[in-house]
Length: 465
Image (cartoon, rainbow, N blue to C red; front, side, top):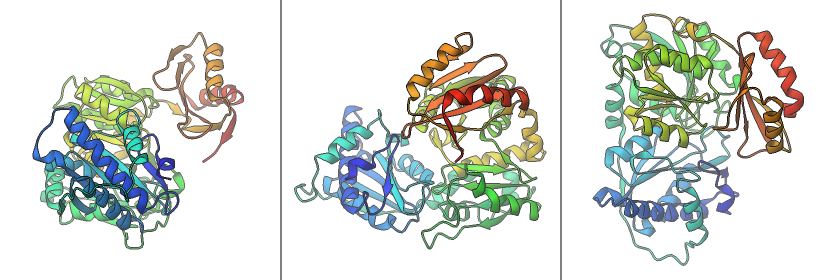
């Protein structure tokens, strides 16, 4: 049944069916085999290459799934570094901190509490997805039986990485918050997920940060609201807290804290593309001419902001596998996606909600302005937001759009990107559903409305979710 749980970028399904401890053991054994093969293929021969980092989130099923996963790794002969209850970026940190062959986080990220899964990384926390090894793990798992497996007997070692992780991150935070020379009030909604553990571990005791903690309780393994900050309804508590408490800004994390949404001092959510645009000036100052990676759904103002700050805009396909590869290839210090994933070279090109939070703090410290004032210069265009359309013939529809708008500037890096002059848009097929996803932008709201009226009959039935 484990084969039903493999997705494009990870393994994820409902617990206990189809995902259970038997499947977790197979996942552990096959992942250990894959990571050993990768080390051999890359000619890496060091003691760390027999070590695999394992972390887990707070879901009720995570402890037993993590134990079964580690048993599979140990039975293969791998040595397991068990770092316990952590956010997903802590696993990325630990892989590099210990020089391990890779790691796995037991989590279902932003999915409801009855889901669970596994996020796999290889050496240096490089992602493992379809095309980068996940299909090999799936193939190994299909031919592996716990009953028939020969047990090699690796070593299990529990380690606490919080002090090292905290030290690494706080080196990246402006000193004004650490010596108290500047104080900010921030409302943080942890969504009952791993930010409820990570934020206190990393930021406690800093005199410059006054944090109003919302949904930090992880003890029940459940969520007060869905741990998906992209859904506007899930931002209600933090928005209210920002306005009521006159906070400088707010943050809502997803379940495993690898991404976040930011709320300005007025209680208004800040689009992640516009937040990236606001960040790049500070980031590029010590990195003149450096690349900045952004996903192709982003506002045109992002590329403009990067050029204005003296950087080189690099457009990427959507998805962490592509974003991380683009950062590595271009030596970019930062990258960002509309989904709330922000990537940083100082975290080995991985995504981290906590690191993005630090970057917002640094932005406010360096600018001396409010968050809304920092973002305002990049609100240059009207945006549709992402709109989904049910469509049984997604490929055919994209071909019809290409014919209909043959005179438009056109790219097919990821789906179809069109620029008619009056409006510009990206239309992508869903990886998992018969949907087309539209992101459209124009110079004013009237042009957006006109473009939507023109496109909607072609794209299918609009789905609001």
